[in-house]
Image (spheres, rainbow, N blue to C red):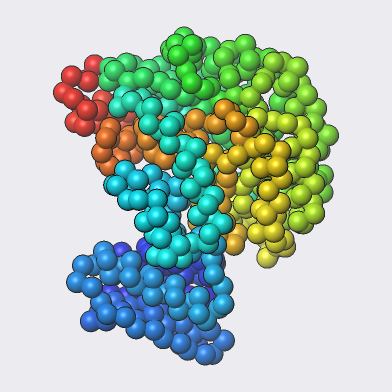
Length: 481
């Protein structure tokens, strides 16, 4: 399928609405002569047309004077046309954004009633009742947590872009420890220096650190001594006793052992992730994992033995070769372990992943039916606490974090709802500065790959001076240290 949008400076909304129905459609400048295509055009009136299997269908609507409004109304016209022609009703309706829960928070802040918000989702966005209830329940749970945020709060993200092997679905910056292991030591040296620089920036701005998240890649791809060095630097720079949460991803059992788990506990981690993705050995092999389901169980037992009492486990619905029954079995296994968090992702086909680059069409199973099995989480006492969506997610579905009462992952809530700044250290890091009480967001990017990060470290430090400049501009003139 091809998508052609004319007459607008921004084509984002019509393009992405069309992809709700045709996920792999490509944006083209000119309408092809015979191939299947969607045309969206703004002019004296709005027009949406589709050629599908040789049959053409067109809808028209009046054009508003405001161009931004025209973009949204043209997208809505495309949605109604493709819903009519394909017979498909996407579960999230016309919503193309990452953060549907944020819409509820923003509308409440603007003074809309609960009934007005419900109508917005069900009528204007054509969202299903089930998905709206999910988003609303999460917004209700988050409400008191977000209300307690301060203008100077922030979180710190530290990235480790190394893994034992690359999973087929992954598009993150992640180097093989076998091939690129020589970079790990100089990378860690630079990373520790950036953590110190982040501390200096935050102190100069009078900021309050709330959560730390060490992610990747796989942080436990570092040696035990490497973890001691990194987490020791963190402990030297920050008062860990004042943190709400300190998360470290220990997701891969093929590089996470009892010694490393003990280091994480000793150096202050209060929450870790052990991420099976699936408990099927066959599916694990298909996605490029070099461990078994038994290794995951061993890793979980060692984490409990080390004293970790707040553990997250990730599962992915729609992995190649998995089935509804297989996913249900993985979910049941995770629940039987009783981790404090279970995060259920829907497989996202990312352009930079090996799954998309190097493979033919795969059988991803009925992911909607897989997600229906998550009712077992509610029955086991878990409740949804954060949610986000991504482009390319199978069947236009979502990723949802579930937790036991009182075990919400604060960092996940803060980054998804964009309530305070996230200072990011490491290769591929994106610092997101959020204006206190406003809607201004500014990003500062690190170099993407470890070698670039190491060689361009002086430039990275210069860019990070933008943190002080941002807070001086949007908080008060006394925040520059």
